[in-house]
Length: 511
Ligand SMILES: [Zn+2]
Image (tube, helix red, strand yellow):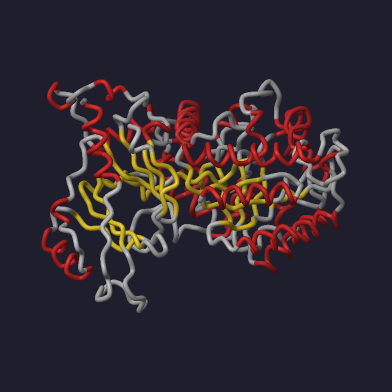
């Protein structure tokens, strides 16, 4: 009975919708007539910096139904502003009738996975007795070969079975990470442009915001993943135009050379040109594993570093490049990356770096040198696509550095739960070049958000079993609840997910 009553209240709190006529709205300068506004009332939490959690208790949020943009955020205690707002929007429903938020719930920005390989999910948790290069050869590349939709059936599997496998595999990936609260992802697919387009279509159908990349690889590949430099360029252009034909404002093609050992210098150079020609972002891997770094330096004797290979190929001189891992950057590389200012960022992938024994990226050191940092799961080098797990991994990785260094030095201070929340939202948005659109909940940003209920049914958080925690002296502050969610929560606590103002997951009814 308690559960039913509570679920009814959550339904009201989580999805209050007020339709209003905003013809005379002073905050709308577009001249559009009668825009509809969705209105929510909740506690709002986010981490705008690495060092603080921002908590706004009991606030109203107005979201444009037309384009998902946050129009206003007002404190429920600011009755004067709310009254003015109600007049301005000609609301047909009184804001005073909307119930206050519950004690155990809040709204926060959606998670942004800045580095994830969609075809590798079947390998999560497998092969971690190997390091990067043998793991790629023995596990990853054989799996990616199964996404070959070239139509010749040479891999021994009938084409219709391959097409079904690709569609079902990619659809389940997008469904899974939306359920886990990942509202934006930067995907690598495979070299196959048709399979990669299938991924883009699933992303579009399920309503996620994403970068989708056809992988480029013309050297050191097995037969099923081999493409010539010319084929790689031609199929990249075909894929870009096919995604543009989808006409989805949420999906962007991302140029994706696998890494310096999988793409020739000529191919990387031409891909940089394409990125500039189409004004598209780039993603690749950098300084992940020491053996990989040694092999890169041997393969490119004219370059002073791994970073310098990409610099000389023109890959860093683009609108944005997301560099996965950045574990072993030298001081010279940090300085070189710094010269590119906001266009270059690193995706910290702690679960993968531990699973494949790659090392620990010194996040605070890089941030101190003005490098931008976000977070990535790097499935299937990483063993979980759940950004909560990735954040926990980032905390533990930072503590490993802290234990191994001088505890008084600021650059080795461990990251706290709000620090990794900042990386998983605002940080990842920044390195994807989306920092003025998502990752933050403020007027002008898009409503990509999660509704968190610490007492949701089937969640692992122990609060579910406490009928009234405050009565027995277990009341937690909002900061403590957010900490509890990040350390202990799971996708069951994420009862609603919005992308661009649209609901893409709603478990409110079933809680
Ligand atoms: Zn990767």
